[in-house]
Length: 316
Image (cartoon, rainbow, N blue to C red; front, side, top):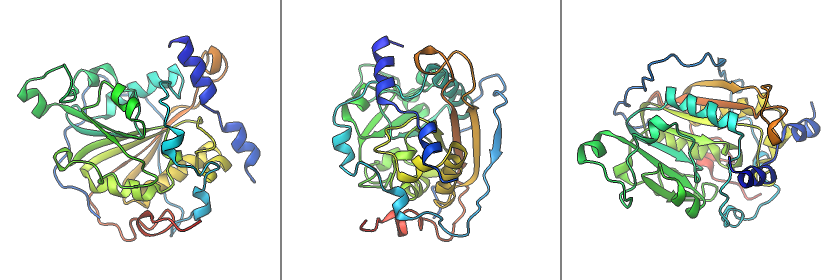
């Protein structure tokens, strides 16, 4: 990594493990079938994986849990592009390996809360159909049977710099919490979705994830990647109050109350590895994936989380 990028990332990112410890008081989606899972020729690493089990009979969070220290528009906060990475090199390498084993080789993948880099492995980058405006051309057959990666994010310059993206959508999900709002019908249904270290910024996560499920093929999966870094003034309040295990459960709740099922928590790195961390020593960045499947089951009460039905926020 370029030294300036590493320095900027360190300044802009924020490890919230210590902060959390100090603040803590103790509808059916599309029905076409997804493409087959990728075959890398090797077995995936034995990442610790556990099933999520809901522990609440109703949405357990209060609107105040989704307040943020900085209530100004996110478009102002992200007006200047940040061409930095928010997890360390070890975590990025692990995420690329994970993606190589779980993401489809063809179809449409939505990378939401996207930026200038999606951390996809080279084998997926080589299969991705470039933007229609790109100088790189592929045959009609390759375009029809290949992989299309759609990026949805806040920064137009960052999205423009991401070479893997076929389509770029600039949208503030905290103002318009619907994946379907600007997603062209020609790019649905989706076959998979990813979100890297950004779920903690969403103030209406159930509304976002419900709309995502409605655009996903039956059997399609979403992969929400978590670490312990954030911009603390933009993370939702409860995220800063709880520890890492409870954050994974919180994201599991988001998915469950959005109608997703087969929710699992995968530990890619628990943060105790050697040779990583800030400035190249100490702990490495921890990394989890909370993932789920659109099983096509109609779920009673779907979308009743966040601050009200379908994520409509109360006046706070």
